[in-house]
Length: 152
Image 1 (cartoon, rainbow, N blue to C red):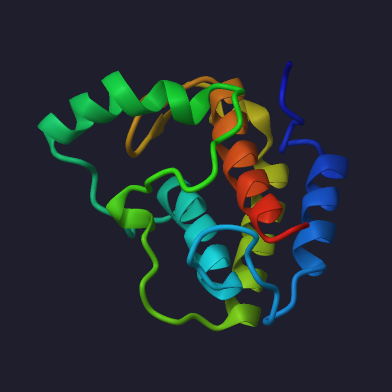
Image 2: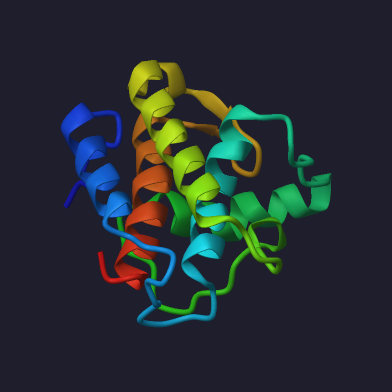
């Protein structure tokens, strides 16, 4: 079953509605992150796509990511609860809820504006070239997983 298309304005509007229903005191249904840390964690995916903020994995790590992690990240199967995360996605410090929320919404608007064709065949920092469907699955599945983690 295909995942909703994050490049569609209505799908993104629904994701933003869900994000807007979060508050600084929203508690997770599983896991250890605060809601602000979760938003910062979700922003990492977009930072990797849009900003030169994270280093590219070395050759060996790149092989491991492409061989063992890529399929799980870009397929349509939902993530299980409490799955281990990559070091770049670990948010250990406290974050400002409103700042992280605003950044995430801004990234979602940018993703819709650029559209699916912008991503088709585009290089991912961790997984090499991805199709627009793989980019969609990576973006949507990760965000949906964490919004469900916080009950929205």
